[in-house]
Image (tube, rainbow, N blue to C red; front, side, top):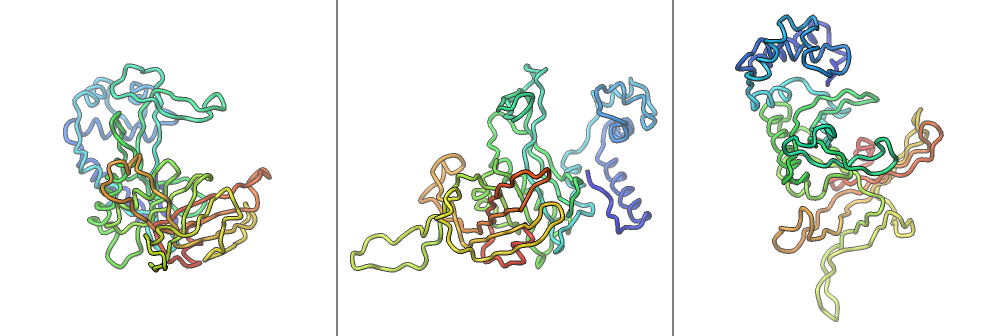
Length: 345
């Protein structure tokens, strides 16, 4: 869900909302009125929706439960038109005016429906027991536009359910391509604007996505595991008296071994009220040693060197006086400045 911008007047915010509702109604084809009221009832319900019949008791749903069941059974909407609608509405922007997208996979757990079609075992952690578990459910890949500051509001732009034969990286790449294309067609990004920033967690292969989406105006920033190893650029090719193949990689940087860390190219600090002093160290260019497995299994020829910027984030403390551990990020952009590092922090 997305909050209305605080700097907008009440009339402007009401106009955006009315425009969205009118175009959403146009996306509904069969049983449009009943589906529209059912959507209002879901959004205006006081608590979690546990039964469809309960929605007919809300003030927003003016029809009986028969009309509700008829809308669910025989209603129909245009999915492509509905997917274009969120990208045509005003989106939140970062401090420098760019769009920031987040992509993640969220599981809809259904342990009570083991016979549902295309049900998968979803990996969850800390549910009931402090251990990994696999619970039946459906994983969904979401793309949302983020607001700045300490807020939990997001503008969800797209959602795709992963099937048993789908790879998360391939689905995410196609999904991001479609979302960015829709943003460009809607005029949300124009030539000359800053690249769209896409952030993701460790569950996504950020280097593979950077290679597949290299033709789009996006910059990908992904979190890396603490046991990863990064490599410096080998530098210009040079010959030796012995000849042989030139070096492919430069120095090695192991996240878990501080002795292997070389001097950062950018170092910035700032004071925060909640986390104390925040430090960001950036090294550029850096790349990961790719292996012919996972999304790179079918790659033809030699594996690529995908250069980017390695960023190490460290805060002085966490809420509750907990010890803070550093966070490792990799950005697909090279040649970053201190201002660029602060933005990604």
